[in-house]
Structures are given as C-alpha cells and as structure tokens.
Image (cartoon, rainbow, N blue to C red; front, side):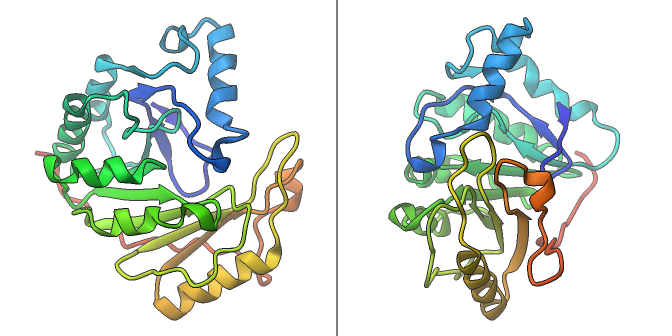
Length: 241
C-alpha cells in the first residue's frame, strides 16, 4: 500500500501490476513511467517492469489496516486486463468483500471484460467500479459499466483529450474530470470541462474536478468556475467481518 497524491482517493493498493495500451488515453501512461523508475530502484514487485503480474502477498494487506480507508485499487495496472485470470480477480474481490470498513475504487479501460465477468464477482456496497473515458470514440465503455452489478458506478474522464457532449449519466454516481500532465501533455479545452460539469449538475451526479494538467499541473491548479469541485458519492462503511 502507499499514501496517494491522487486527489480523489487516500491510498493505493496494487495486487496486480503492469498493463498494455488499449486507447489514446494510454499514450503517456504514468504507471508505465513509474514502473521503470521502481524497477531501476530495485523494487522487487517491479522487477519485470510493466509486464502484467499478479501478487498473492498483496492480498493480505487490507486486513492489516486499522482505520477505514478510501483505496484506489491497481493504480499501476488494470484489474480487468485479459492476462489476469478470473480466479485472481475473484480473490481480489473476496478481499474487498471481507473488508467492508474500507471503500475500494476500481478503474478499468477494459469495460467489455468487466461486463463479461461481472456475474462471477460479488459486488458489496464498498466496491466503487469505474471506467476511463478520454474521448468520444470510447464512450461505449459507459454502457458496459451501466449493465454491471456494481453498487456505485463512476467515470474517470482523464486525460480528457476531446469533448464529451450528451453523456448518458443514467445510473452513474460520480464523474471525475482531469487534464493530462507530464512533459508533452495534450491540451484540454475549458469548454469541454464546463459542459461536463453542467451535464452532471442537470443529472444530479457528483462532480469532481481533479486538475487542469499541463507541464506544471500544480501551477495550473484545479479551480473551475472560481471554486474547487470535490463532490463524491456518499460513503457507507460497515464493520469488518
């Protein structure tokens, strides 16, 4: 586990690592860059760099957390990657099921496989399931997510590299928007963000504006309409089992 600088979570937990690119949102993948850095530092978990790997030992970690946490699952991977066996995904879900005192945020670009497997998984209240949507061409991921049994469903529109008008937000609980950062970030138009914020307001969907991004994301900040948007779904926690 690791404390996270990601604004919409508290910490990260990576029972799997590694991934492969599937769409334009993956072009400047921060996890790929970070994996190379961790490999060069000699971190055992990243000895294979960005190859897809499962980590049985990591499954024990959430049982040791003493206080309730909001946890981003697999910041360094995609749990629904085709190289991750269903049996291991089920093990990850079992850990989340058995730790209802924590909120687990799972995010995938592989929405088709998510829908294919969702009936094989136990969706407890504390598992928030999201899909990444970076531009219009991959908007169908929302429809796959909507059909799953996840109790809380969310969209991560980051890095937002195109307009997303007329989003179908039925049965969607939360929308996160963020611009790309790094050495050569693709620009995000303010009108795209404002339009999404208005769509969320009309649909009564929680809206979280993460960042403008750019080469200096700290300087560019995360203010929109003269304020910050930190809305999230209501968190329901239970005692551990």
